[in-house]
Image (cartoon, rainbow, N blue to C red; front, top):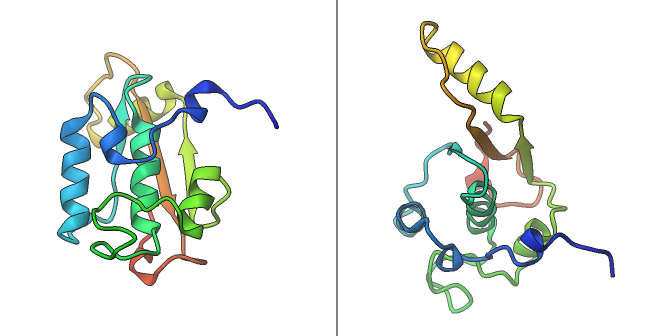
Length: 145
């Protein structure tokens, strides 16, 4: 078996497993439960706060083939057993693309585009996980970012 970094090996796979980001996970779970998911999310912040983890869990929850409220998936948490969840967890899903940029480039460009007079005080990393045109996912994910 190939070596796997500890952070990836023990990465939480459910919203309830994420520590220290209750406000974010609760908001996303409610949005999924009520079927009021926004067309895009930007996860930003310093290193190690869970941007990638939460983005991957959200991608699994959105792409999960089992309907929320079914026997296989009674809550908005991803089921973790369907093909889509397994592919995203393994990192080889064709429907989910992870975009990772250096913190200085992202924050400088974003701030300079948003407000030309503002100057960034410190670099903040941004994590985006985008869904392209669905290849195997349901049509509800037809938006692009």
